[in-house]
Image 1 (cartoon, helix red, strand yellow):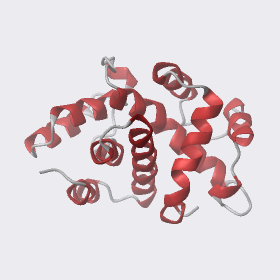
Image 2 (tube, rainbow, N blue to C red):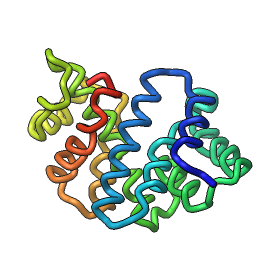
Image 3 (tube, one colour):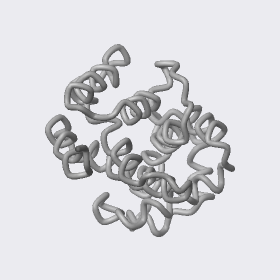
Length: 184
């Protein structure tokens, strides 16, 4: 039976980078919050968030990530809906994001990383001081957090069927309870 503890063990087995583990925690928190909002299974959605990039350090290319990770997860007995949602965060795979869970992981992945980056450039490095307007302003600055794919953020909002401002505010609020774990 897959649970959060097992998912954390899998993450830590493959992910040694503190920053990538923190990213996983942030996406987990956002996924858990969206599951709660939609009346879905919080544990399943949280596991998708926690494991979406677990194989990135060992399979860092589009040819491998997250497909090689999906093979590992299948071998370990994870349910197919979780594996499919994890694969859906990679837009280049052109998978059909046909469930709320698969749409949510795509919508929160890049944004969680971006919100974290915005918090880290604040003098206090506190998530509590990050505002929607600050995130939107930084989104326009292509030099800021240049590895974050802004098109994925905008496309994710569209597919999830939410307003950009509301989505940013929702994700900021979702990250606040885990801010100490994120160093924010």
